[in-house]
Figure 1 (tube, rainbow, N blue to C red):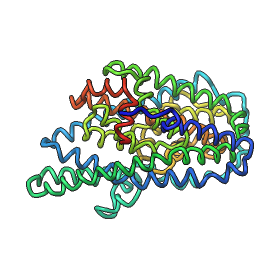
Figure 2: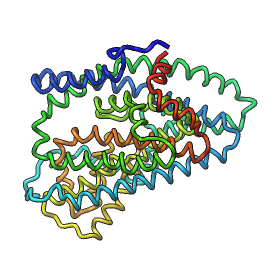
Figure 3: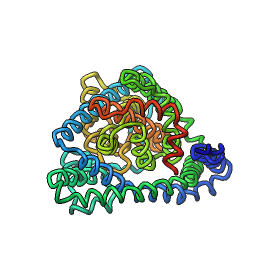
Figure 4: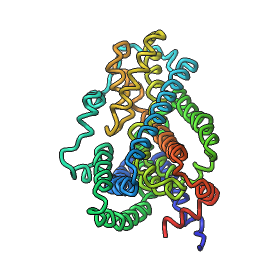
Length: 426
């Protein structure tokens, strides 16, 4: 297989695009801000293909299983993993917030707060358990396939996969059709990924052009605290989990460099989802595990978002000189645990879940969110990166638990990432 030159590699093109976007936004902010349609357009293109990718992958994964109890067991194990590490991320954010005190000394008068957070308050009701239940049930069997609600796609795919297993002899043609359809669908993914540098350039140019690097300086300590905490969570916590399960977290990140750079450039984890699912299959995880764990993790396993939620809540309280005793912080933690799960499928989950949490903790005014509204964009990249890495680790772990992991293939993929990348593109 012919090795591509450096300038032909997608990750190199994305890096160049991100740097170019930063420079344009810095020196020509008005032009940079006008690049927004490029980033939005690329994300919209990827969202177009997410529902078919999840539906086909998960449906086929379940259809190829003969034991439906195994499907239920995988789902339960995945949820146990998600709950454990999401809660751990919330606790770590709480601990770091108390130790580092990023908001201490700002002495902001709550009466002086201004800014519009009403859109997040309106969305926050969707983060309740009732809102979650209503959010997961689609209008029709096929409506999720033309929408962007991942949870609804999951529900329909699971039902279809189970139905195909129960009617295996009569519905084999449907299974064969989906198998054949998966080939052009993933080829579309490959075609769309060639536009990733354009999307990353537009998104980064807009962010720097609109908000400017200077907007980070006033709240640099909070941003730095969040980034360092997330990095340590990935290296120490997820790194230990990876080591225990027989793989190296750094090699995994190198293997997923195209997807991670795409997340960095677009400030969204969604564009990386199709490629992430295909790469985790190439890394030896079974199709059923990948199809169930990754899309579900995008809604329930948000490690970066959870660190952000408790850390940001404490920052707001500290900046407003609001003392939160231990019992109030424990209430905050419990509320965040519920709201982080309830907001699954809600667009902009990071800020929305924060609004939902503060709405139930009256000691901290929800208007305090305006303090971090300007820098939230600069923290969204780190949230999304941590979320994607966390879901990648979860996929390997659950596959290993279920003995549906080809360990030799995993090691080959991690040690020869370039060959896997070329095999996907070819």
